[in-house]
Image 1: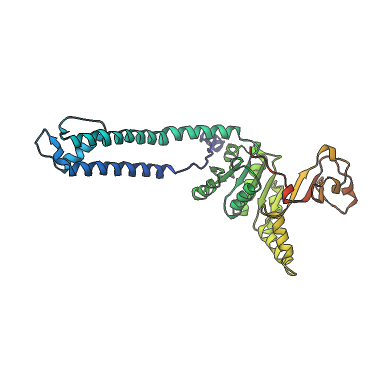
Image 2 (image 1 turned 30 degrees about the vertical axis):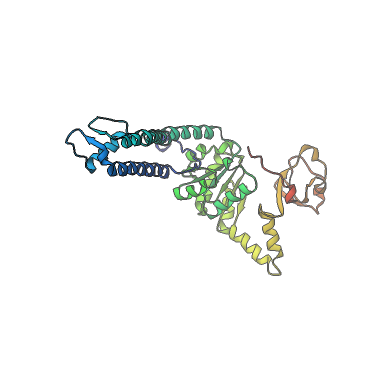
Length: 350
């Protein structure tokens, strides 16, 4: 109970999305510009120091030049050092004054970037987070997770509709470069998944790098979103059953799949290449799964397939295109078909 109470008090993880230049780099560039401009003014005043008059001691040394440059650039004039020649006055009027205005613009822009813009961005992202729906949650952005995100984007999923959850800041920085939303947090915790609006998500993909962590994330997500389609990647074949027991709709073992491709290539590379073609967004054909429409009920698999119908999924059973049950589709059936690239349905960008 105490842990639950403390968790409620903790601020919810906030989504973030990549902007252009990082705040640190932006500040460094602006400071460099300021230093270069000040150095230019100091150099001019030093070489033209005879054009300046010090009302205090009559001598203009390098310290006086720096002092005069600073008070001139910041619009603070005390009158103790003044330009006395026409060229010095023209330089202050035509060069120093525009630079002074530029200084004010840079300073105001810096304040905007580091205070106003950051506050505004957080407010905008919090609003997006509260209204986020129909998105894909990706827990873990290691090798499998990054490839998953790239494939989703290649298949037409809007990056703004993808939320990547990870604890590693370096990994999240890499995910941000893909244009997706990122959230630093522990995906095994209900608190984090609720902040990612798991209940309003379209699907979830889990690739945590460790099978025990992956299964725990799946358990947490399943009890928060009982109907959410969840796909997980496990490394060991022994963990496929626990992953399904945890609520995963689809369990993928990358090593097992690679073994199947290797075995299938023993008589030639055609099978392996075609399987890769089917699985990739860059392929000429694609395996596509969908639920049938109401007007398709009663028709055969071959009649409703946009491409080539392969299988009917009905009440947990898999029905092949050669089986008699595939000749009459029922309400709620899902079909798997092979579709040519030019006929592949695109995911809306919104």
